Every structure is written in structure tokens, then in C-alpha cells.
Length: 267
Image (cartoon, helix red, strand yellow):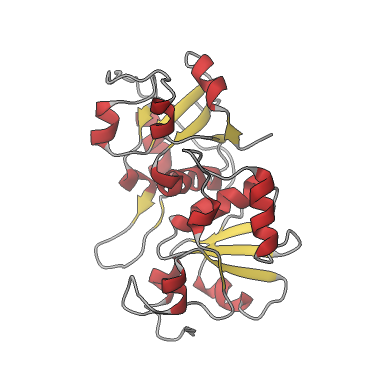
């Protein structure tokens, strides 16, 4: 079953209560206009972080349960992620929920595209009854840490996929205290998988061609990372769309790696 949900189908099934649209845009954008019956997800609610760290983690099981309970989600609901501007933030939401084994779909177009097509929007914010949401599924093997990545640097069966810009990958610029990359990484700038004309992803044929061009094959374990684990989520979803079954994210990514003095950095 496809990860992507066709926007035409959603437009015609907005009253289907089995599908709940989660909007990860800003509160200002959501309050201005959103898909009818969709629910706003504050970005900070899907993260676990503290003021002393340069990185964040996926929110805990308890945090996700509380969030979805406040949003009135039922355990049998299919969650549909709606985002904008290339979909990196929406991809992070998708990955976070999929990590906890939840049933998640990704709306195939951005909210901007939805509105440009004249599809229904509203500025009415519905009052939602809370639910008692409990995650009963086990977490999926989608997340790794720095020790795991270190063990894979020289593993020919694994590909470390740096989804940052070429400038960050080459060490020309740095988003944190150190520049460079994890040794033996392969650069795959996340934006090249973004679709044209408001589509969040390129079509499967074009994605497969891209991955083949970059030597990213299905027989390898793929470990995606970026600076903090957000943009890597877009590449993670793109790989999943194309049937890559062994894909993980180094959740804290280079923001974590570059602050550990005992870890090697290449530039």
C-alpha cells in the first residue's frame, strides 16, 4: 500500500472520519486557512530536547500519546500528514509517528498546491474532544545513535547518506560548531527528491533514477542524516516510497556527531 495519499481522493473524502489530517505548518498559517477537519500539530510537540544540547530527539512514546490524545485521534485512525515548502518538517512528523508503528499517510501535494487547485479550505478551528490514546505497537527499527553509525563507517553493506547541502557536506560552511561530514558518507542533498509544481516528492520513476544515479541500492542498509534529523526525514520517506526496506535515521545527526570529540570528521 502506498505511503502517499492522492489529493483528489482526500478532497472527495474529507468527511471520512477514519482519516485524520495532521497539519504541521505554523499556527499562524493554520489559523489563516487549513484543510477542513484537519488538526494543527505544534512542531515542538514531536521533539524531545533541552536547552543545553545542540540536537533534539524524537518525542517519547508518552509525549506522542499525549499529543494525539489532545488531537482526539483514535487508535484505528489513519493519520494523513500535510505540510508545505518541500515537506521536510512534514516528513519529520511522518517519520516520528511511523517510528511508533502508527498508520500514517503523506498527502502527495503541499498545502500551497492544495489551495492553488481550489480545493476546500477553512479558517474555522473545530473544538476537538480529547481521546485516551495509547500506542500499542512496538517501535520500528528506524532510529540509530552515534555508536551505531560509528560501527558502520567501514561497513560495505551500509551507506551513510548525508542529506545536507554540498557546501555543508564539503565543509565549506557549518551549521554548527564544526564543519565536515561523517567519514565515508555519500552526499544526497534532500531537495533533489522534492517534486515539481507543489508535489512533495518526485514520482517513483524519477526517484528510482535518482537513487540509482547516486549508487543507493536496495541491498544496502541506508542510514540518513543531516544537521538535526529533519531534512533526512524527507529522504527517508522518499526511499520508503521506492520500496527501500532497510532505511534508518541517525536522529541527532551531525549536530550530535560534531560535538563529540572522540568521533572522526572528514572534510
